[in-house]
Amino acid sequence: MSTEPQPFAAVDLGASSGRVMVGRVGPGTLELTEAHRFPNRPVRAGATLHWNVLGLYAGVLDGLRAAGATTGGRLASVGIDSWAVDYGLLDDDGALLGNPVHYRDARTDGVPEKVWSAAPAERLYAQTGIQHAPFNTLYQLTAARGTAQLAAARRLLLIPDLISYWLTGQEGTELTNASTTQLLDPRTESWSYAVADATDIDLSLFPPLRRPGDPAGLLLPEVLDATGLAGPVPVTTVASHDTASAVVAVPAARDERFAYICTGTWSLVGLELDSPVLTEASRRANFTNELGIDGTVRYLRNVMGLWLLQECMREWEGTGLVPLLKAAAEVPGLVSVVDAADPAFLAPGRMPQRIAEACRRSGQPVPRTPAETTRCILDSLALAHRAAVRDAQRLADREVDVIHIVGGGARNALLCQLTADACGLPVVAGPPEAAALGNVLVQARAQGLVSDRAAMRELVTRSQPLTCYEPTGGRAAWAAAAERIHEGAPCVSPSS
Image (cartoon, rainbow, N blue to C red):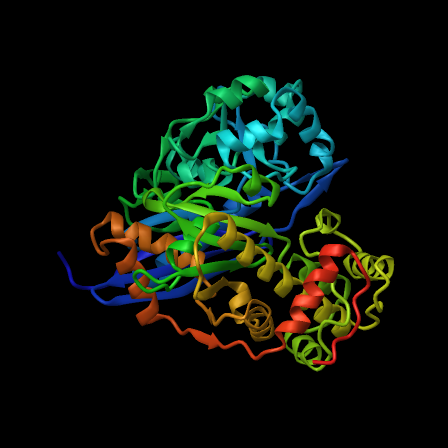
C-alpha cells in the first residue's frame, strides 16, 4: 500500500452554505483544505419554503471539479454529509418530484398533535428515542399525506442520499441520518414497523439501509465529464448526518469522559453512549438518541444555536462578525437572557425584535444595540449548553470532565469562554471543520488508512489546532441566571 497521503473529497452541506473539502490522509497525516464553498439559500415559492437542491448539486459538481484541480484529477473517494430530516421524492423514472421542502416551513404546524392521537408521544419515544421536533421526517410525511406529489413517489431519499444518487445512480438510506426520521428503532438499528403502521407511513419508499463505510457506487460517466475527474471514483457512505460526522472528529482521548457541542446553525449538545436512553424522564427533557458510527448513540439535545446570531446579522447588514464579538465582550454579562431552545425563535425573520420582545415580556432590560443583543444571545447559548450538559449527565448517569466544542462555533472565542464559565468545566475548542474531517476519516477507514475511532480522534488531536478555555468563576451568577430562565422571572444584572 502507498505511504503517500491519499486525497478524499468531503461534500459537507450545511443549512446556510455548502462546501467541498479535500482531505489528505496517510500514516500520521490528516490535512484538510477547502476546494469550493457556495451559499445555500432557501427559496419561498408561493406559501412553501424550499431548498434549492439543484443549485446545491451544481455547487457540488463545481466543488468536485475544484477538488480535482488540486489533485491532478484523482480522488480516492467522495463522501456526502448534510443536515437531517429533509428529503426529496422520486417518481418511477427516478426524476425529482419538486424541490425538497425546508424543515422550517410551516406545513408541519399542528401536525405532531394529530400524530399523537394515533401514536402517543410516550410510545413514539419508547420505540424511536427521538426528541420531539415539529420538523421530524415523520411529521413532514404526515403533512404531505394526500398530496399528488407523495402519491406519485416511488422513492424517498434523504438529502445526502439524493446527492449520492445523482452522482452514482445508486439508491440507499444511510443509517445515522435515517435515525433522525423518528421511524427507526435505535436498539435494533432497523426500521420501526410498529411506528410506521401506527402512523400510516409507507417504509417501502425508503431504499435499503447502508452504514458508514459501505460502498455507495461509482461516479457516473457524465459526472466524470462534468468534473474532469479521472475514473473510477468510488463514493463511500459516510456518517451522512453532519453531526454524526462531526462527532467522529471530536478530539477526545481514549477513555476520556467528555461531552460535545457541535456548533453552527444549531448547537447539538450531548454525550456519546453505547446504548440509547429511552426513559420517560429523557423524553420529558427532550433528549434524542441518534445513531453514530460503530453502534454508538449520539445522546443529545438540540439548542437553537448560532441561528439566532445569523438571523440578527441578516437584519444588521454591513455589520462584521469580528468587531461585533469584540463589542459584545465589553457588554456586561447576564443582563438579559432568553431561552435559546424556545420554538418561538425557530422561524426566520425579525430576530432582533423577537429577542427584544422576549426580554420585555420577562421584565428584563431590552437590548438596544447589536452588541447588547449579541451578548444576550451568547450568554443565552452558554446557559442552554450548561442545562443540556447537566441534564445529559443526570439522565445517562455519566460524569463529564471536559467539553469539546467543534464546528463553526469553535472559532467564537467569546462563546467558548462563556460556555466554560457557565458549565464550570474546561472547554476544548476545535476543529471548526469537524463534519468534513469526520467525513474524510470514515472514507479513509473504509480504505484501510485508519483503524478505529480512537485512532481517528488521535489523528485529529495531533494534526488540528485546538484551544483550551478554563472556567473563570462567577458560578453563582450563572446559576442564578439559569434559575431565572427556568422560572421565567425577570433577570437582573449580576454583581459578580
